[in-house]
Structure formats: C-alpha cells, structure tokens
Image 1 (tube, rainbow, N blue to C red):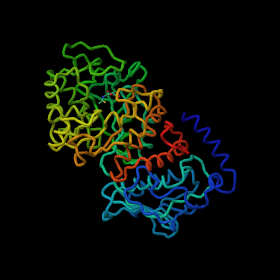
Image 2 (cartoon, protein in one colour):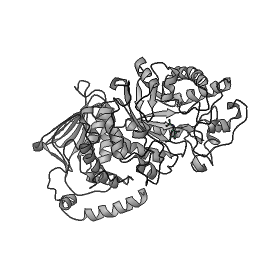
Image 3 (cartoon, rainbow, N blue to C red):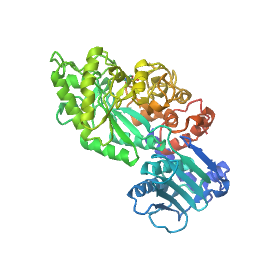
Image 4 (cartoon, rainbow, N blue to C red):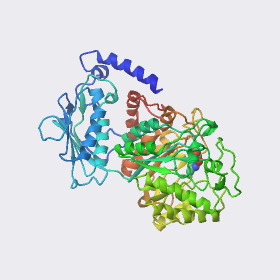
Length: 530
Ligand code: TNX
C-alpha cells in the first residue's frame, strides 16, 4: 500500500496546507498548546515530570545545537533534523555554537547521572529542548522520544502549517534490558535491502537496538560466502524461497551497507546461519555436505526438521569454519547466531558433538554465540546466549543454563512471534503457536516468564518475524504493527510501568503516525484508534 498511501498522503497534505491558520489546530480544536502529553511515548519512559508552564514551540529560527567537538552528537543532530524538516518546513540548521535562542540541544556528558549507557535526560523548557546522555545511543533514544512528543503530523513528508509544540517538563529514561531485538527471515522469502532499511527506520523509533537476520534455511541461502560461492548463486538463485518465489541474496557490499545503515540508527545486526538443521539449501547445492555424498533436491515447501549437516565429516567443519570466519569478518557487532533449532534429523549425541565443535569456532573468530534455546541441551559455556522460543513457561534446560550463568533472550513464540496470525481472519501468517492479538503480545513479563529464569538472567527480548507467508514490506509491516511496539515496551520500560490501559491509549496514537509514513498496520479491534 506504500505507493497508494503516499499519493493520498500528498493530496491530504496539499489540502491541509491551504488555510493560513495551523490546519490541525482548526481541525481538532487544539489551541496553541501541545497535542501530546509528556510521557505519551512508546516505550513509556521511566520517569516523567510534566510542567505545563514550560511548553516549547519550534519555530523557523530554531536550531539544532550539538555538543562542540562531538561527531557523535552531530550525527544524531543531523538525523533529527532530517526527521523534523519535512513536516515543519523549518531549516533547523545543525550547529555547534553556544549562540542563545530557540534550540534543540544535544549534549554528551560522561557524568550524566541515572541514564546508564543507553538512556537520556530530556528537558523541555520555554526556550528549547535539551537532551543529555552519556553516549550517542542515549542521545538517539532521546531524539526518538522528542519525535513522539510532537504532533503525529510531524511524520508528514510535506510541510504542514501548524504549531509544533512539545509539552514542558523533564524525562529521565533508560532501558530495563540491554538487548531489544527484532528478527527478519530472509531465507523463506528474500527481502530487498531497501525493505530492510525501511524496517530498520521503524524499529529505531521504538528503541529497538538489534536486528537479527535469519540468513539461511532449507529454502534459501542469502549471504555471499566467497569460499563457497554456489551457496548464493544456486542457493539464493532463481526458484529459491517458499513456493520458489523468494529468490535473492545479499552481496558482501550490500551486507556492509546494511550494517552501516543500521549503525546510523544505533541498531546492531546479529547475523544467523542456522545449523546443523535447516540446511537443505546448502546441502542441495554442495553434495559433499551430505553423509552419502548425494545432493538432495532443493525444497520450497515449509516443512521443518528434515535436514542435517553430516556430523561425522570433516568437510562439514571446514564448511562451517569458512562460513563463520567470513561472516565474523563482515560483522562488526559482537554476536553471531548459529541457529540450532528443530534439528530433528540430528541425534541428541550428534547435536552435542556438533555444538561442542562449532561454539568454540564462533569464539575463535571473536564473536559471542547466540543459539535458539535447544543449544542449552549441549551445556554450552556461560558466554553462549540461548534464545527462548518455546510456548510454555517451563524449560528445564533453559533454567539450568541460567543457573550456570548464561544470559538468555526471550522470544516466546505464543507472545512475541510476529508471524502468528492475529485471529482466524488474518490473511497472512501461521498459527502453530496460536493467535496473537496485540494484548497477548503485551501481557507477559520477560523477567519472570520461564520458571527459574529471572530478571538477572535475561539479556533482553526479541520479536522474530518468519517469512513463510510474507513477501513485501507491506506484509512485514502488517504483521509487525501494532505488536512490535508492545514487545519494544516490554524490553525498555520498567516492570512497574506495565499497564494495558495506558499502553493501549499510547498505541492508538501511533496509528496516525503510521498513516503519515505509509506504514501498513493491523487495526486491532482491541485498540480505540483515533
Ligand atoms: C519455527 S522458531 C521455526 C522456524 C519457522 C517458524 C515459523 C524456530 C526457532 N524455528 O523455522 O519459520 O517456526 O513460525
């Protein structure tokens, strides 16, 4: 719908541009005061102190002032200017002078208390907004909060004449969990870099800071590996993907561009090569990866659990090491995900043998291993991060791993899987873990969801989006929104702030923002959309 929406959006904007008085003010009866309340943000901030006497209104002479000498602050300033210029029509110059006057100031200080490495303090006073943080990531998070504190039409791609007022007061905010992730499956259907960038832009608004890319599976191989070139030319070529309709792959250059684009939004890419199962694309391309030396036919159905690398063969480990080495070399982030799920065609003993050889390889190339929670069955070292995808609240292997000191990522399939249908009428998605309405996605606690896995053992949360039924960015958006913001809030906001009534009201206000941006979303009947 992106194309169509944009044209409608242009028309609407053109109409609203005509009157001399601020359009939205006339339309909604709002005076010059702010349309939003301080704290009307997803994820909800940790501490909010409104002050109605210090609202700030952006004007044509407002500048974005960034800490002198800080390239990092300048980078966030430029990003923020890029977000605010189209709708306001103001020039919002990014300057590093101490000149007085109306400004949004971005200040980096190692001594800022109470905000940790990812948080920020945001003060809205009469002459401007000041965001303070200890890191660029913190400034960026504060910039996203500021963006949501402005009226929804700030997301318009054309000038809208109205007052751009930010509610006065102070926010002090930092995340509950260090890791807030989303996952995109490029294997079942490839998604183009432009689509991935557009998803990254959406994720960043909700303070998601990791994007896990599921790069390989039975139906396709989506990342260039020079030492095994046919993985992509054949395994990512025409006819690959579910129903043969999802071909494509990322070259190393495209992958590097994506890593850089994500980094500019303070998002770290976590690449996944799934093994020892989910490997048919590789095994049908290279016969030597099979115990019998015979390449199976390519598969485009959505069965799982039938493929396995040959555990007793040295060729397997040469292959795995080549792939891990090349992937680690192109990945600046600390994590590398080795899958490990649904290896039903691998015996338990072989699975342990495999993991005991492969986990050290990840470390050898300087990365920390993530694996789906089955990896906990191999008693991995404490540095390994199991990702829980089960649908129950009991998992002895995971609890034992937590007791041994492993940190885990929480992605329970019946809560956080964005590819599950909302209800029986959802045209896209699967339903093996049940229907997931937005309230289901919101009503659980990552810090106590699995018995024996407490808050201290949780590195964070992640919302996976598997692509068996998804082709376009519109499909992705429709499944991600509005559930992704629910998972994002569970990952960022303090446990004590958890409140469905508050969340659902703040979520309703995201609807017009998605409309402005041409983002598809599911109009859940649980939400009172404006
Ligand atoms: C299970 S969850 C899988 C994936 C499927 C997904 C579909 C997990 C670790 N494995 O292979 O795509 O279900 O929802």
